[in-house]
Image 1 (spheres, rainbow, N blue to C red):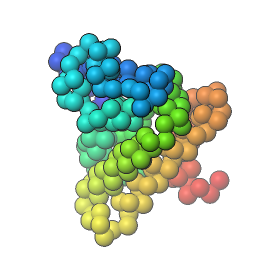
Image 2 (cartoon, rainbow, N blue to C red; image 1 turned 90 degrees about the vertical axis):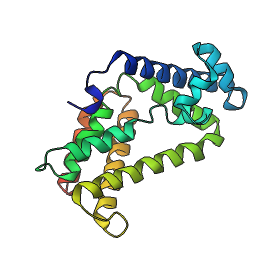
Image 3 (cartoon, rainbow, N blue to C red; image 1 turned 90 degrees about the horizontal axis):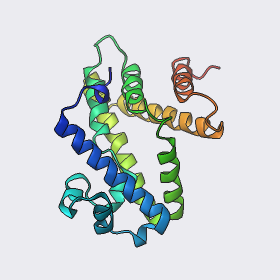
Length: 201
């Protein structure tokens, strides 16, 4: 069971629902009107919460669109560190990320809408790429901590994290290119099997 699957209390479920509603509304408004025509105030009015509530979840409007779930990196880090000792670092990463992507097929419309918004609003790209970079650095740190290595001087944590991110990216690209005719998890497992085989195939 992934960390994301653990039962949540009522308060935590309400918090997650509010965050999702804010992120989804911000994304939809940006898609319909352009990010330059969307305000935090408009998003909060549509959701029915205060501006203060918005800033409890996101630093800015751009974060709500590009990084709707800011807790996923910590969940992945925790899952990597909590994996059984006999599990390799790559396998720990694979399963931790798989837990976060378990519902990707159900959420594909949001992914596609986010991609469309990024294409139409180039000003969001630096924010999106900065978030991706921060997440990748967190993966490096988690692997280094698991292996007891220095992330600044040892190559292995960076290599393992970057290769894992590449496998996820390749999975998404093939899944989208196939018109989602193949199961996402099947492609995901195939990508990591190829890594394990040293890409010999």
